[in-house]
Image (tube, rainbow, N blue to C red; front, side, top):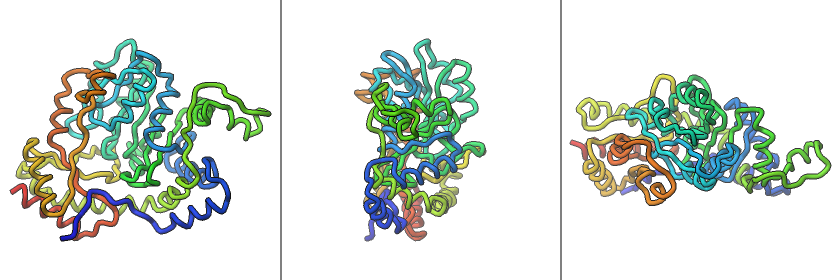
Length: 377
């Protein structure tokens, strides 16, 4: 029986050509010609003021928190139902991740509860656009403005998705995207920081260049460069950028195929939802998603775990998702919950993700769909 894996990275066919071109050009470190193409694509596609390619989405978040000036004891509000990178970014600066509740429909940060989590020590909000479906950014940005807080969008899953016509990651102060191999557009490991406030560009470039004013030197603004503040090695290599450029060239086509798979699943499970066997993904009208994932919400954990096991017996890999960060050993040590987070616990126990990757055939998708429906009878 052919196995259907959960994810398989897609290659467009130009990756080796571009990597070879980068090698022949003779610059393998960051900020070469392919980096310039990728960052220009990001600026034009998102409308951000500056895009900086990073080694990962994680490093983009760490860079954003460094730019935000988070210090010891200062708090950053984020969902508990998210990947650990946002929490690590705050904790690495000796800040305190404050885990706020998510919405029961989209599993995004519940904008109605953020103000309850704000204290005099709060400095920033990091909303995660779960599954490439946008948070209510108008409401979140309004809360941030009222309290003088920075907003760092965790748009790791959000490339090619938008909110009210604005690209995810380019709506508030700073945005972070990922090009990990599990993402829609990939270079194996990679990411980008999107700087949306032009006043932050100069400092972002300094942090990006290991705390030096090297970018000013190459523009001829200073006669030598030196260490001027804290920074680190965030630059992606030119080899990663060359691979990524082959993907960005095909981003429209790849997103279109993922959406075809997503909608094929969605139609297949309509009857199961009508019979209250599952709940399908919810996409608000303001959000244009990118089919980053297709998930189902099952009645309880036992049903979810049984479905995963049953699919595995049929050669299909399905997986659950985040264990709430506030319940983890490090979450209890470095952060704190803002409330009971009942929705977070419930969603974590009931959610299952199905295979979505570009080279899945329609028969593959139908096989997964039929197996799910059969197992839930």
